[in-house]
Length: 135
Image (cartoon, rainbow, N blue to C red; front, top):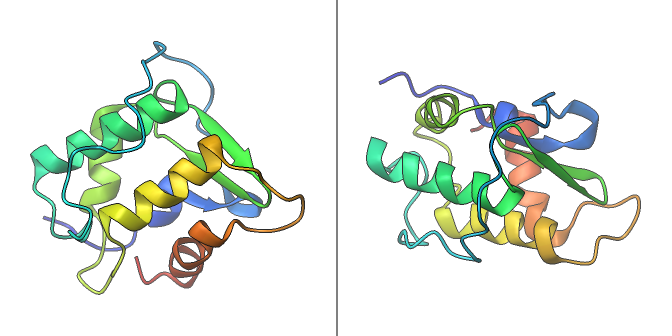
């Protein structure tokens, strides 16, 4: 497994967000939880769990290759499950982001009130870690 720094491709502040398009099939919203253990680090997930989290993310955003902006944060789903799993698989062992951290941020972006010009509090740590290359 190559675990080394792909967080920015999946989730990042809007100034550096990836261009993921807006194509692909529409997926139903699975709700606010993926059923994975919220205390598990993303680095520690199995390939099957990576796929589960990818399907959850894509569902929350309406499909693969979609993005949603909230304040100064954009959450994007890669163009396919395989690409998404590859991104999660590239996380560094030093990356402390948990499933709960990730779900919390995605949920705020999807359902929260987003003040213009700021990063939602639930996303601040994830954005910081992504921008510093820790994850």
